[in-house]
Amino acid sequence: MSEVYFADLRAVRASQSVLVKVQKLFRKARLGEAFRPGDLVAVKTHFGEEGNTSYLRPELVSKVVDMVTKGGGRPFLTDSSTLYKGMRTNAVDHLQLAARHGFTYPVVNAPVIIADGLKGTDYVEVPVNLRHCKTVKVGSVVQDADALITVSHFKGHSLTGFGGALKNVGMGLGSRRGKMEMHALVRAKVVKESCRGCGQCMLRCPPGAIRLKGRKATVDPEKCIGCGECNVACRYGAIDLGDWTNYIALQERIVEYCYGILKGKEGKSGFITFVIDVSPLCDCYEFNDVPIVPDIGILASRDIVAIDQAAADLVNAAPGIQGSMLKGDLTPGSDKLREIMDADWGAQLRYAEELGLGERSYDLIKVR
Image (cartoon, rainbow, N blue to C red; front, side, top):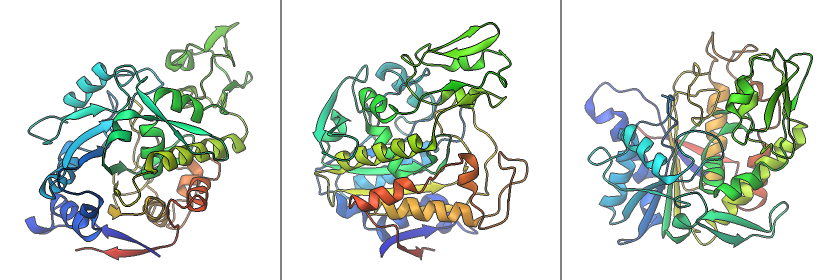
């Protein structure tokens, strides 16, 4: 079984602080073995979206950066451009947002480099020849990096059930063209009987695929990119994102992108995941809802599959928070991730294991 190291958030003295525990986990999981002195080390994280407050604080990421530097690596922070409207659609706005959220010197002692260039067009096609993709379009900066350390915020997601390390790497480091390929099978449809004509979906649609006609929203399927923004914006359940099998295909495409991104970096990658502020939706939104479970802790592993499986298990084993998006069973052990999106979130884990990216079975090792 793969080793996944875990630290809770209890602290009664400075030596037990979260920042100290990040460093302990880095050492225990042997993440320093992923790079050699002098290596250019990409530290993948998410800088949050404007208006969102659940993204990882830069102080947490800074301790990972410090450990890379201490090990002789030359770290830089990175992420790629998005499909949807917001502050991360191009490198200029993305860098400004990262700075506004504190990802600057001296808070984090590393530069920020956007992985797919100024407009999201700077990518490398990596051959994979898998079920859905023959090649994957990867941000060239990460492809050129010598090693990859991924720092993830585990949370729910409206299309994949959860966002963890697999999604952070696969979707997060795919170029804009790659993101369009991953979302290709998801298409929005309006349930006319439920639509109130409020127009919120239209305002949130990145490609302008939604219009109001006769006080009802309509979607142009030729323009829809399957991002799911309209589904989140609608308060009346009037957006149908299609058959659940398309969600599985989306998960599998994300995994195939992971496969391509990690190709050539065998033994040159490591993962840290914070299971805190477990919001029901991605940090890509310009708001965040009440967490669905209490803060749990921090995980570290060299296995991208095992760390996601462990995070999902910990969330589902925790009690749900009353007053959150969860309306069903809040007891420990209930599938809280399934309630966020009524589809098979485990598909990404099974496929990743099938492709040899890691193991779903793991040994959870407590670090104090």
